[in-house]
Image (cartoon, rainbow, N blue to C red; front, side, top):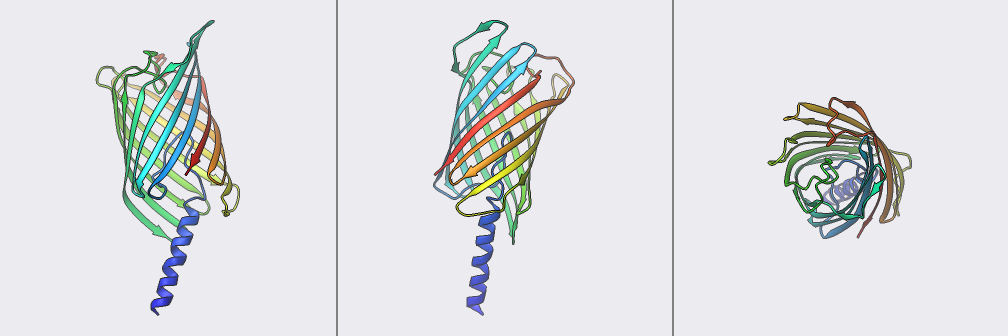
Length: 259
């Protein structure tokens, strides 16, 4: 009987490990599920944002390290570039970001899991004062939030809710990100998967009394330890013409490598 129980736990763990990778991480959002301890993720997710005031590009080098299966620390080093009218500038360093995540709840089942993770991002004013939210503000920002996610072999859903505080501006923001992942291929080993992502982000800038709702349609392909991804994000609701948050559309292009 003890042997049967041991095999049962082993099968459960194997199934859990399989479905955890049935969808990859969201493209423009985040998820509570993390890799095993002593893992590294090298990533870049370039955003090309078109606005009424010109085009802006943010291309970060993202390095994440997981000291354990429940914790993650990271640094984001962005390069930014703006093109306003016919004036083009050289690329420069954007605002430095330090990330921390810690898993606070986990409940696994056969072929499914639910997890909750706390998250903080500290942004330092190392970039140019472009005054474009999410690109380069050149002001200190402090973000705290929680990510809840459910995944099964058929689909994955994650939702992040948090507050971004900017003490020297009027850009305090309540932010919510919802991501739905739909795998188009059956789980396999070595990893080979293609997934569609449907992602929404709502931002309420409390001091401005401005609201922004965007939708991103993305696709992600992973093979082994390497992933490529892309998405197009468009605004559904914009209640303010403030140039710091106004946008026409954004294109995201990314890669990531896990080791």
